[in-house]
Length: 114
Length: 113
Image (cartoon, rainbow over all chains, first blue to last red; front, side, top):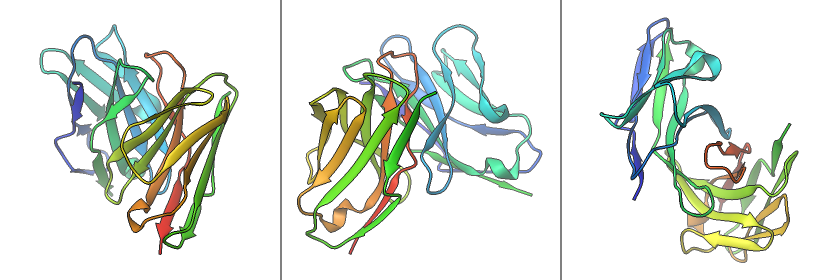
């Protein structure tokens, strides 16, 4: 069965510092991976995806993610954090069964302090 | 471009009352549709998904049901709400291509009194 893990419930970063939100996955076959962000009382917003090709994927709002097959990881990164990046972040992997479902991690709360 | 609408944004209902939450998608045809619940905290639980009109798959047994009367309309219902039905309900749509993301509505905050 496919699964995703986000090992950190919370990540605290100072504004201007680089940030990393971790995600590891377990799949049979090649993974299709996604990152989403959720602001309070809002739906999830798609940030970026890895399907195939370059291991470094660039997405919205200056975020990028690095796919590492040997470590089965897909960490979300940003070179310089903003206070407005504070939100809940979800990693997800595609379930290849019927319905195109996504399997989500439990989420990581990112807090960026000025 | 595609858009997804969910309403109402917030809802307060007494225990035992019925529920109907509606979700509609514009700008696409034959989307896959999904209902999620997010309990206090953070985790997302997939409740139902649909790959076509009248086709509903339930992921977890519960007090809720879903229907898809039209291609771009997805409804979440209950005949009698329980306290445990409280939560943040999210509708999402996705094209029937595995390399594309799902897109979410802004959710309904449901409180049961």
